[in-house]
Image 1 (cartoon, rainbow over the protein chains, first blue to last red):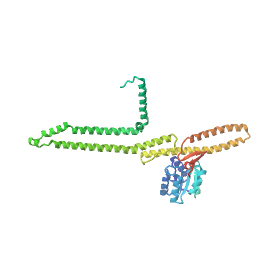
Image 2: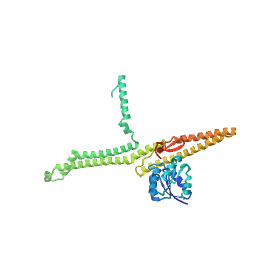
Image 3: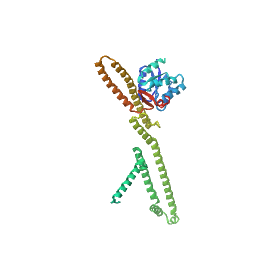
Image 4: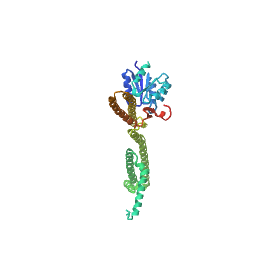
Length: 118
Length: 253
């Protein structure tokens, strides 16, 4: 099922790459944000079904942004997409209330997580 | 010019010269000459504007205050007056008008000076300083310090340049970390293949394959060394893993 997705990443190259993968899979990328603060604002205005969130970003990092989004909307679906070691950060992401954690060098795995959200 | 005949004087002279050079090298003069070329050029332009304004103003002030002009004006007025009017004519009134004109010109020059200085300060703050900061940060990023962030103060063209440089650094970081993560997986895979080859009974094949695998492993290690040579934003490479700075320093992620 096609979903409305917001992509939050500080690298324009990664935003384009993730958007490309999602669009090819039939999803709609409703917006892009280059840091956590922009991501929070975009979430409030665009109300996407899913947010793909980088962790290491300037201005506001992904965990802080996810916390703010979940405070605003408890039902928000956030999937972290980061270069940080999965073993160390997956648990933190789950404790925060995220739907998943994907390492960036296996970006395509994000599709199975989004599909599993129903 | 003083001629130094005694070699002792030469030494003293040399010492004084080197002291002067040291003062130049370490003192405020050096700090002035260390400012960016753009700032230097701007200072020269503004100094020229001030010089031209003051030269013209000073020349006009001098002319207005000169006895020659006073006399010329008085003479031309007096020429047109009748004998009766000449007796009533008060030269001091003309001088007062000229003096008031002089004061007004001084006031205008003061206002022009304040405007020039204010423009210079605003120009320096809004254009030169951000450009200096962008230049310094871009140099650090070019040297491999991807942890450097270009400060973006305003959302204008200069701010856009800053944002683009930050984006460039973020893109480069993504590529390098992508290489790091893949090479780490590849090394684990290679080591596994090596173990399989070592346990193979075909000694001839295993020796050749082992040698080739060693080359491939060396190439991957070289690639990892290159990736390790960079400084990353909020990230540290450790033991084949990508660790957040907060965690590496004992905090949470």
